[in-house]
Length: 123
Image 1: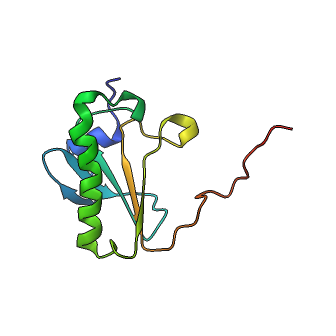
Image 2: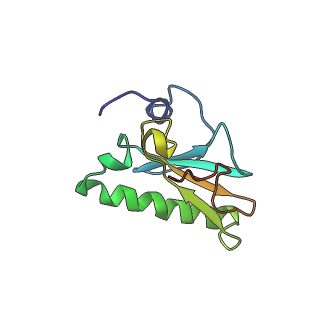
């Protein structure tokens, strides 16, 4: 799936973003709709639409997303208190931009489950 997304436009600097980290593989920037005091999105520069589209050759960049999340957590001083990393997949998983991204949330205690909806059960 090769589609121009808001994230690819951020990578190309066609639209502005509050960039917090960048290297040759990934870009991290503040989420425009934060769900925690710190809410960053870490994206691969290579366009990968969903978790379902990760190929064997993407292992390095996918692992690097998590390495960068831990690095940012240490740099921003919340690694010891804790944080959450989330990757949504497709509509029912909550994915709204079809360019794979890792949410990095911190700055408050996170509950579980992370949503208030009741689980639907069959009678």
